[in-house]
Length: 123
Length: 402
Ligand SMILES: Cc1ncc(COP(=O)(O)O)c(C=O)c1O
Image 1: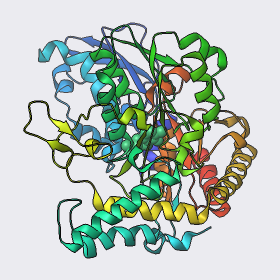
Image 2: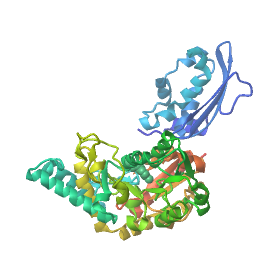
Image 3: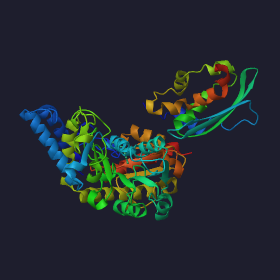
């Protein structure tokens, strides 16, 4: 299957919520060392709910598009629900059959999110 | 050129294969030699007294001699290994005993991890110094860098003769001579995994102490390689892999081992691989290094011209724009487009290239790249392959450029 479908290219060229928030309560940064992909996210959480978020990143189309797709679903979501997100949720958002070689790219967005939100909850 | 000799293309006639630096495709003669062992020879080395086993041993001896003369070594200086990685790891173990905490091991920043990690780990075990020579942007080691880094305590210098990232060929004999002049007592190890596929090696002229390579980058089989060592080292270094076939007296208090190469080849070797390696060396000899290089230079020149003419400032050729200094490999990056996207999209179009760090993280970190895209050429590639690549790249750049 073709990985670079229109909705992927759209989110790659026009990532939603790109740029950090001026005021945020949670932040994180994650790296995919084998590709050099980098993502960073800022979130504003009030009363346990994600009020706003913004991210920046460098990397391949798959990592940036999957970040844009995933993060676009999160505003208004409860922090605890966001922490329950699974790799399969991200993959179904992309709608792609991602090969093992590119899986880390697709899931970097989830790793970055969890790093920002879930460290305290999960520990 | 010579595409018809490679059965791969009978099965994948449309595929453009630009990944020979990872592993070269195999000509039919190599496949036949491997199958010949599996079907007709099929016996172990040096263990049977019946005719078939004797013939297998005799054929392996012939290939050892062939390999020795291929690089101008003596047969007892040729150790069969499972590949470059195995050879370098075994060598690091063989040299361990003589290394002290006062010594330094020096490698370059363009080493493949196979010629980096065994030395880094050895240095760590012995609390020795581990130093990395920084290469220039044109892919070489400058005289001043050598002088600065090769201090008197340098015990081992391990260098690749042809980087699998930049494709820039070192002037190996001169580099070895320069190292010898600065640190005459250092053991010099050359990783020739890429070099051997493009240029003849004469170990006597080179005067390196150890040279290692793999069969599979030389149009040969996977799982077999060569560690060459100067006879005066192999006479005294202790074996580090123990088992069958390498021992004279296993019961005496101090075990006595056979002479080289047997003492370094414990256990059953990759015999089918050795048979096929012989066919690969015959293949290279028949084509000839001059012809190999001429073909490669033609592709290097054409690819460099087409890439730079088509993409101008958008593309950076790693190691600089000078195809005459490269062999087999041409790596590049596009501004603003990730190498993995390029490789995946090319793959979808039936063009096989590599993208990433190519097991050479230190080079990428030192030179400020997170990843690169690598083309590597073989005898079966043609200018038409490069035309197909350029057409595909134009589409990809259109799709992904911001
Ligand atoms: C320069 C260099 N050294 C070492 C190796 C390791 O070879 P092998 O994987 O056959 O052991 C490679 C293979 O990619 C290489 O390009």
